[in-house]
Amino acid sequence: MVAVTSGEEDGWGADDPVVMASTMKVPVALAFHELVDRGEIDPAQMVDLDPTTKTPGPVGLSLAEDAARMSLRDLARVMLTISDNAATDEIIRVTGVGHINERLREWGCRHTVIAGDLRELLDGAAADLGLARYEDIKDTPIVGDIRALDASTTTRSTARDMTTLLANIWTDAVATSAACAQVRTAMGQQVSRRMTPATPSGGQLAAKSGGLFGFVRNEVGVITYPDGEPYAFAVFTQAHVRFDNEAGINAAMAASVNASISRLRSR
Image (tube, rainbow, N blue to C red; front, side):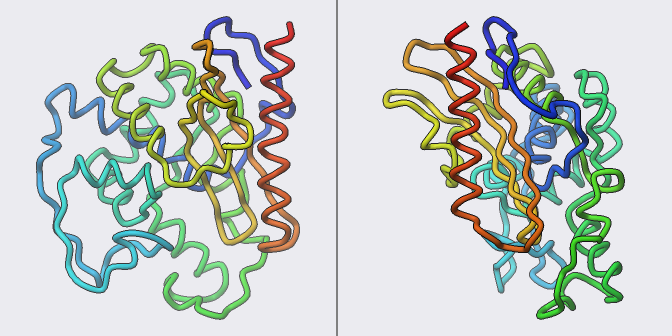
């Protein structure tokens, strides 16, 4: 947790490596919008998504049975608001994994690595289970010792990297001010409101959730109090039992964020 204005921190295990899951979509979006602002990507470019090759996922275009056409700008928006995997891989394709990782290092996120796109992550999980591709998993039990759940091999970060990045996005200290504004707006429109219990009446929540195979449940974002003070948070969890006690984990995540903010505000 970081108090954006003062830079004061509160937390536990801030430098431990963690599995990012869909929280990786925040730096992907920032790198994309930066290239847009610099004129290197046309956000109005239309992209055709083939239902037979698009990246699978639980929501949005990933579920479409028919061909879809959407602009890069709108793909970037649904990537953050509903965490659409098919949209994400199109944004990664035009932005470039190498470029995203280079910008992360330049933004000071030295422990954050985007190991590949989401199709590679999902197909890698299938390969670890002895299958050809993710669509073949179906009813195959997913165990906890696959590479996608190992923070030493998969797309990874630390809580400190993420709260630092978020604080910098909220103060226009990275990328470009226009890119930061685009990310702030889209995060404020995220459909999932897991951190609502930690957001005071009259406050504002902008967040990005992350989940993976029923083991990983993450949330990063910024809560702005009614007095205008923003607090950047990053909570990463990994359960021992798949899909076990999800409501309890959500409640504990929100409680931990609320407690950290309370400690920061009492100093």
